[in-house]
Image (cartoon, rainbow, N blue to C red; front, side):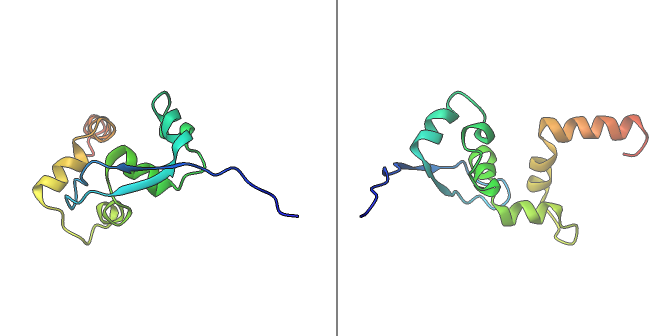
Amino acid sequence: MSVQLPATKIVYVKCKPCFMCGETATVVMPEEAYKRWAEQSIQHAWPEGPADKRELLITGLHDDCFKATLDTTVPLTVEQDFAVWNTPVMQELAVQLRKHGLL
């Protein structure tokens, strides 16, 4: 006896260009998760999705490029450095570092 499982429909989502390398990626995800994403964060819409794929959907940042931003041995271009620091989270971090005399 064979069991017939319902087919999961998938969608291909083209991400915005990565601010580090300029390349765009396409993420394959379940159609239902894509529909839920219109009303909630990707973490809630697709909790079982790989974290690197969810990051691609949010920012366009590739996993290797993300790791490069954390690697202090890889020099960033001025544009890449600006893109990393020009986010609300990083701007707030800079405010707090300045407030405590650390920047």
